[in-house]
Every structure is written in structure tokens, then in C-alpha cells.
Length: 199
Image (cartoon, rainbow, N blue to C red; front, top):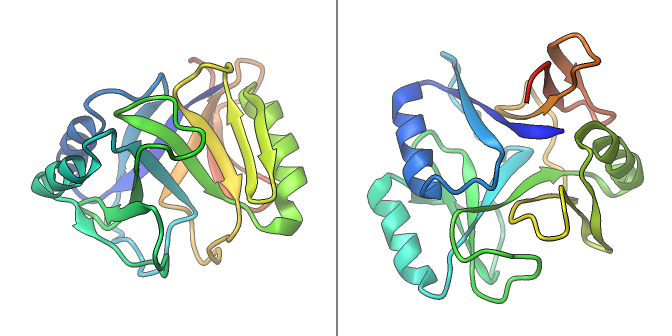
């Protein structure tokens, strides 16, 4: 089962505080776990990011997140109906506006988004359904949305474009598999992920 996301952090207490406040503690079950690192975020876009629900007052939510330490980010998104921000260590995330497809909550974490190249889409979808025990709720030209159940607030969203794989991913999925040895593995596209024995 997908249990959370592991995030490398230079300043763990600051990042824990930021994300607790940013999500208002609403993560739909998956936990955010921070691992200390001395390595600053590289300039390229992460392969894994979060989507937060902006709710009906999304402009106020963007302002609130900026007071917490988020900054606006440009990853080449152009004119899109969501806001791209970065956390205090530069990790990109999106704030989705009302009416965004697949959003089942007005606040908190609503999607964990994994970059998947078009040619890897079916292999990655099958792999992550097997690893997480989450199932395809939607499949479109833009990608696939997995959920633990049809009404789960948080989805695992996979689709292109895929950022280049230049180094170890700063954000990594974590799954509980009691039948496996704990440790760090790679998915078919080379993304690192963590296996634990407990949920």
C-alpha cells in the first residue's frame, strides 16, 4: 500500500512545519516523511510533486501559502488554470482551482503527481497499481489517476512530460510491503522509492 512520500530536506524542522501548515494536516492518509540531506535542490523540476486544493477562495489560499514561505515558480507551465509554487527549499507544487478534474476535496493534499513519459505510461501504471494496491480511477490521454478507493481524497496521478532523470529524486514514494525486505528500490522508469514493512 502507498503510505507516503519521503522528502529530502536541508532544514527538516522548517520543512515539516511548512508542509504541516500547507496541508493543514490533511493528507488523506499518506504521511510526509523528511530525511536530512546536505544536498540543495538542483535547478531542474522534480519528477514528483504535490497538488493542493485551493478551494473556492483559491487566491486567498495562494496568499496564505506565500506567507508560510512558498514562492511562485516558473517551470515553463505557461497560462494554466492552477498556480505553481515552490516550498522553502524549492520543491515545486501546484494549487488547483475549483472545478479542476479529479479534485474531491476543498483543502489539503489532493494529488501526488509522478512524471511518466508517454512510452512508459502503461508499464508505470501497472507497476504502481501492483506496488500500492491503488487502482486506476481514470485513464486519459494525459495520463492515469489511481486511488485507494473511489472516494479517497488523494490520488496518485501519472503522466507526461517527464523531467530528465539527472540524480536521485528529491521526493520519493513510500510503500508498505510486509512480504518484502525494507529498503530503497527503483521503479521501471528509474525512480527511487522506499519499501517499509509497516503501514
